[in-house]
Every structure is written in structure tokens, then in C-alpha cells.
View 1 (cartoon, rainbow over the protein chains, first blue to last red):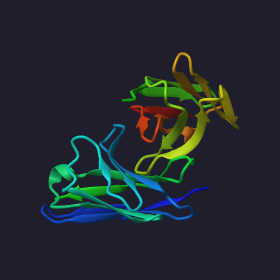
View 2: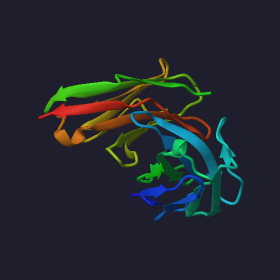
View 3: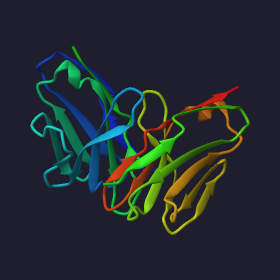
Length: 114
Length: 110
């Protein structure tokens, strides 16, 4: 089945630094990738939708200058959390799908900002 | 936009019993309804899905039903096992965006 690899699985960074999270579709070409944030015991909150080769579409309330998304190829999207603060600590999950195919998720990245 | 409601939020069943999770959606344009299982510290995994032109789909111990008229869809797990314990999310997809339910924490008691 379709595999989405997300890296790193966890990261600890200091306040004010930037962190990059990668999301790769390993065995299919992902025309669309999505980035979510999940708080403990809550559902997935969509942050942005990313189509290959174009700018990401951010959901209302998500700062595009803080959460930089790049989808440079059909198999790779990156999320960079810039100038991270403790309130950015969360579980970030990416998902990817090809046209007409189901959505598949990565295993998430636990970000802790100290 | 789409609104997906899911209940119950928590569910405990004895091993071997059945578990049912129900969802409703608001946008009649939604035409695809996946279910995901999320284990602790991991991303959601697709377990079954159903399209709007189908009323029921089954895969071994898991089944999903869809009532388009009432905008209801449900997940049924039979002969539950301890490894079924996880958080289950329903979702509805319209044009592009997938909207998730709040999740149901299922606990299967051995």
C-alpha cells in the first residue's frame, strides 16, 4: 500500500530557532499534500494544503510566514516552523494523496520547543 | 464548510463484543468517507473507506455503512480484540478538503 514517510519523528529545539519537517511519498506521486497539527486528545487540525509546484493554501488563523511550506516535487513537501516558541510545541502530521486516491498519513513529528 | 460530528468520544467494550462508532456530516456534496485508526504517538492509518454510491462495505471484521439521505455513516468492528484499542476518526471529503470527526477512543478490555 501507499507509504508516507515523515521525518523526524520527534525533535526538541530551543525557542527562537527554526525546525524543518519532511514528508515524503515513497511509492506514489503525491499531487497534493496536507499538513495538520494535533493537540493531545483532539482531532487533526488542517493547517495548509500544498499542491506540487504552487504556493500552499493556508487555513484561516495559520500564519504562513511562521509555518513555511514547500512542495517542490511530487514526492516531497516540507514544513518549516520558523522562530519556534513553546506554544508551537505539538504533534505535526502530514498526509499525501494522488488524484483519485485515498489520503495516507505520515507517522507524525512530535515537536517540543524549550 | 463541512461539519463532521462523531460519537461516542470514548467507548469501552469487552473483547469479542462489537463496537459501533457513528458520524454525521453536513455537506451533501461530500462523496467519500474514510475511517482512520490512530495508535498512540503515530499518524492515522486508513482502515476502510466508502464512496457515496455504495451503502455498505466490509473488510473482514470491519464494516462501514452509509446513509446518504440522512447524512450518517458508521463503523462497525466485530469480534473486537485488544489490538483494536486506538482512537478512530471518521472523515468526509468533498471537493478537495477532508474534514475529520473529533475521534473516538476505543478500549477493548481483555
